Length: 58
Length: 469
Image (cartoon, rainbow over all chains, first blue to last red; front, side, top):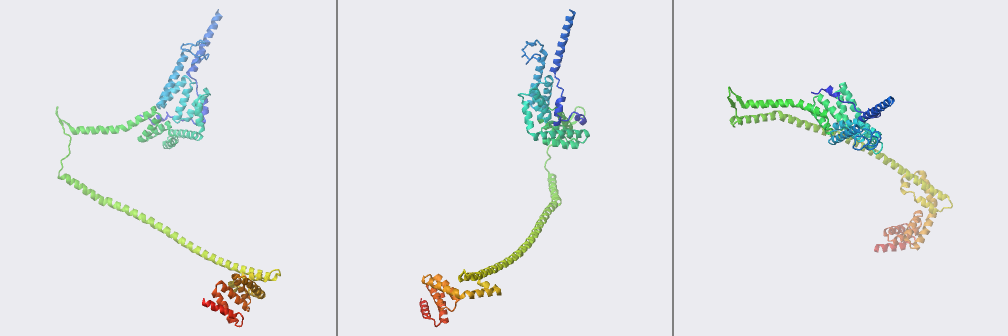
């Protein structure tokens, strides 16, 4: 059974021409590639710190 | 595919051969994004716009720099009426790859047609307004707005769906179904639209099904009777009743009833309608006649007025004409008087000016002063003119120019009626011209007026000669 009010909630307002710029700037552009790069960078950092600690022990 | 760390082309190995970076997961992400792009492309190919949008969004979540996916997503948005969303995707795409990007053409295409862009923006604003109306409970206003939106942009799938929902709220199932059909023609994969259609089917089916079920039950009860125990009586299917007298009576009664209904109910109504039409026609014709009569009266009045005007103008023209004649006569008389007074001009000039004054004017319209001057001038130049004309007339006669001779001699006789010779030679000039009537008149006048003139005998001879002819 469809409820009008519930269905209405699924409709969102359309973007208007004046909102183009703000929409572009406010977009969350983080993708899996970014996450992967962050993870890779963190890993590298950890590896470097481990290496530094090992060198200090020596 | 290039290494994310050093940019070196990657091989089939799970690490970069240049920098040694682990690219196993990186490759997986790229492959996944490509697969999602392909899926989006396939879905867009069969107009499953919703499915394509989902796939392409997933693709961009994996790899936001997938330019093709972003361009395709923009195109799909544009196709479903979301032009600004499309614009956003293309602008971002251009940011990622400024050169050799098809998004550039799309943006230029949209921007080139400014009118179209304004229309699209107007439709989006109206759609948002309609959505606000819906939230406020003003569904009728929302319907009006959405109809306007769809008249401007019939490809706006979301507007079709919202309008369908509003129709469903009113239980206007047919219109809702039509809108959903239109929506599904734009986007065959619109799950919400399909769900709404399903709901419409549910709402419209039960009544038919119930009716169908009842009918079947009735048929069953009509045909099968269950007795006690295992006895079951099957009623044969009812066949047509045999034709009898009562059937014909019923038909006859029906026909009679029909005829009576036609006669008492339909015919009067028909007659009244025909009469009404005729009276309307008569009314319109009489109105037309009245209008024409008024026009004719107006035109007659106008004709009368114009005739009066014409008469007035004629009168004025006559006055002007007579005034013109008077002025001309005065001018000629003045010119004659001036020529008479001027010693440099001869009497013939005076006579010429006097001759230009119309004889009718002198006889009928001339004033006393005018006549006095006219007579004076005539008298003053009379002798001299007569002599001059006689001389010139005789000269012309000798030169055998009978026309000129007759003209001058007539003038000489006009100014000096005592010159019998002028009259004789005038008659001779007419005689030689063959104008016997004029010649006879001259000779007879000579004989009667100057019986002692030496020219009388000659005149008589010529008269006899003419009579013999």
